[in-house]
Length: 316
Ligand code: GLU
Image (cartoon, rainbow, N blue to C red; front, top):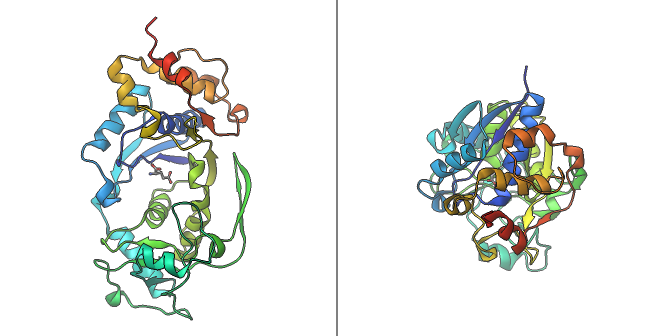
């Protein structure tokens, strides 16, 4: 059976050069190696989802020359598989309710290390001392947040691009959220249910998600689902200040360049250079895929410079 990968845009904002880089590499690897591609729209991030951003993302992927074999599948269209997964974890005592606010967690974990600038290490305030199974009828899916009870200890996995990774979730993030008070699954739970359910065994994504992988592996093990994908966590594109590409770095949205009349081949030419294909020159996605070699992709994050923007927008 063919391997399967997924393109998983979140319709929470417009696609920029950084997203394009990851999607293009994922697509090129899939086309080179005969993997099937599923398009999944990850639209569960309630308040941040922007109306029409799904359509825009699909249009821009097509503009770049990126296609897919199945989908789009929208996570929001059927919540039942995520609800079932939460109920199963709760029944096994591996999920528990927690409505702590961010400031409460902050106050309780003042002396504990923080996972990163956005994420706090949950200090275990609501964690039952022992495994406490909760029956399905007692699982409040609508107005209660739920956390996953992490297995302590160092966990190792081999990333096909970034090499061996080791992480102890109990020290970095602690028991993380898998269900929100708003009645929706969190990214970590939804992505495991879908990757397992859709038979995804090749995952290519940005290295900002490398610390999510052990969480997803633990959830999958707790659910008892078939899940042993190979992972490639790729370099991100950053602005000159070293921060992840965002609005403050100017308009790097694909839609912006498209509106200016920049040909997709030029955008791909820049991404090709970032992928280690050689000096930038306009090319199609097909051409990139014919020349791309993952072994030659530079390991470090890329810096987007004003000169890159100038090269994209030059008219001759
Ligand atoms: N939807 C996620 C994003 O846009 C990707 C998640 C994943 O690849 O696991 O960042």
